[in-house]
Image 1 (cartoon, rainbow, N blue to C red):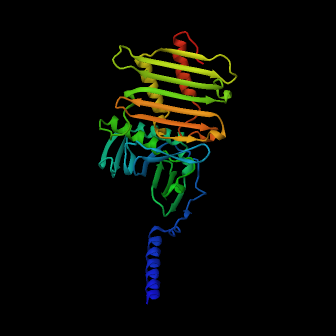
Image 2 (image 1 turned 90 degrees about the vertical axis):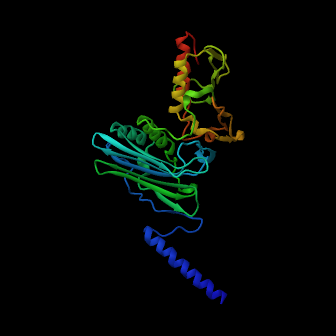
Length: 352
């Protein structure tokens, strides 16, 4: 009787599974396996730049996220995004305007959030700039599923030309496309739309204008990229209670072990704002919690520290060869070198 009951149960499960597969139009993935339902022939280049509608749904289940290293490994980091749970971001052209909506289901950190508004149609062009920057068209046709949990995304972009970008995934880390997803960039863009429409942005990272300390150090061994090879250290710090208490320090140690260059000065408030904008533009806060130490691979070192007035401190570091560096949010530090270089030139000094 026990065997008969087992067979009946298995048969009922098979019928249910078949019904699910029929409803989705796909066979359910094997337990523990990842099924690739991607349309590999879908075009990976979109000619049009005129978005008609944009829809992006993704899952943010808490403060744990991943950043991919250049060596292809996923490093778990803190996720301080403003949207939580199941998040839906939409932007649709409406004549000379564009209607947007933002919603999330919330989680243990934050209550549910839902709102909508209208902005100028130029927002669609700005969104297309982000799509181009992250080469989102490469995702067209991508779709993977497995029986794990933690990741979900559904992307739909329609253009006036009739072209479209569609992609999705559901399951564990293996359903995330190579190169990652632009969740952070899309979230930041929709936060900006909320601000433009006079609405309150959900609490997340503190605004950049509350920064009190910044430190970035790294080794550049590619002088062909436009700045000398060697070890760089760049710092900004604010001393509370002192008038004009904004200070900067930068040093450069050449790779050929010649004389070390040091630059230090008071900072003007406008320079602090420029640095804050650069930190935002480079999305360094997305690296908070990134730690990848493999000194046996090499002597490359990367370290970041950003402190805010609310006493929050963001850190990231890596030791090894170039493979341990974060791939998605870190390039080569050139823009920060240029920023401190310009500050030095204004004061008749040199860096590097």
